[in-house]
Image (cartoon, rainbow, N blue to C red; front, side, top):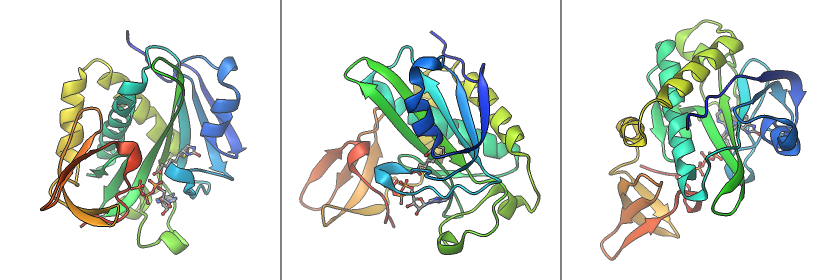
Length: 236
Ligand code: ATP
Ligand code: BTN
C-alpha cells in the first residue's frame, strides 16, 4: 500500500515541538498529515538532545498510521534521509548521511530526523520529525557543528518551497522498492570504515544492514548493534 504524505498540511507560528503536537493530537489527524511550526520552543533530537529551532528554518512532523511495524522502523529513517538528500540537491547542495539520522555538509549538520512511535510489533503510529536548517546564519554555540542552506548557497530560500520539494521527493520514493532506496542511503553514508568509541572501546564500522543494525569490529570482537543503541557523536 502506498502511504502518500502531505495531503493535509497545518502550519503553526509556534509549537513546543511538532513531534509532541502530533503525539498529543494523533487521534484527530489522518495518516500522512504534516504539522509545521515556524519555530519551536522545545525542539527535540534523539535521547532528549535539544534541537535549536529559531524562525527561518523548517520544522515539521509527518504522521503515519497505516502499514507500520516495529521491525521496519529504520526504513522510515532511510526513506526520510534519502528524501532530504534529494531535496538539498534541488538547491545545489550535496549532503552526506551520518548514520543513523543526520545529514551533513562539509562535516556540519544541516538536518536531523527524529522518529517516535507507539505500539508493539504492529505499531499504532509513527511520527517522523524533521528539521532542515534553511535561513539561519548564526548558530552561536553550534557554529562549528551546524550549517544551513543559506550559509551554503548565500541566498534566502522560502521555507515552504523546501517542504514542497521534500513531499514530492518522499512520495516519489514510495514508488521504489526499499532495497533501491537503502542503496542510495549507503551511497551517501559517511560512516563505513570510520572508527567509533562504543562502551569505552574503539571499533571500526564494517557495515550497516537494511534494518539499521550496525556491524562494528576491533581486534578482539565483532558486534552487531541496533541503531537505537549507538551514538556516533565522535567518529573519525
Ligand atoms: P547521535 O550520533 O546520537 O545522533 P548527535 O550529537 O548527532 O548524536 P542528535 O540527537 O542526532 O545528536 O542531534 C542533536 C544535536 O544536534 C544537539 O545536541 C546539537 O549538538 C545539534 N543541534 C541542535 N540543533 C541543531 C540545529 N538546528 N542544526 C544542527 N545541529 C543542531
Ligand atoms: C536529531 O538530529 O537528533 C533529530 C532532530 C529532529 C528535529 C526535528 S524539528 C521537527 C521535529 N520536532 C522536534 O521536536 N524534533 C523534530
